[in-house]
Length: 75
Image (cartoon, rainbow, N blue to C red; front, side):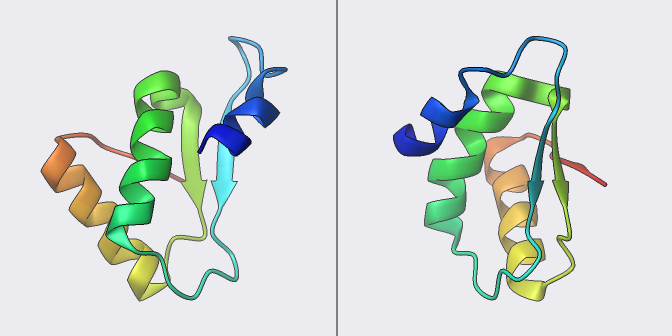
């Protein structure tokens, strides 16, 4: 996550962050929690997820929403 956050320093407060899961085969809950939960806490509704139909991605996102009591914006 720390390596990715350095890429976000140029994102201003009006810009959205879109994460595309196209081509992702496996998405584990532990990695998802470490990666996505801090992003949704920092960017809130400015964070959106796309191409989340893969069963592994979908299951991980749904689990993270449930255990962290958060909602991810999907487009």
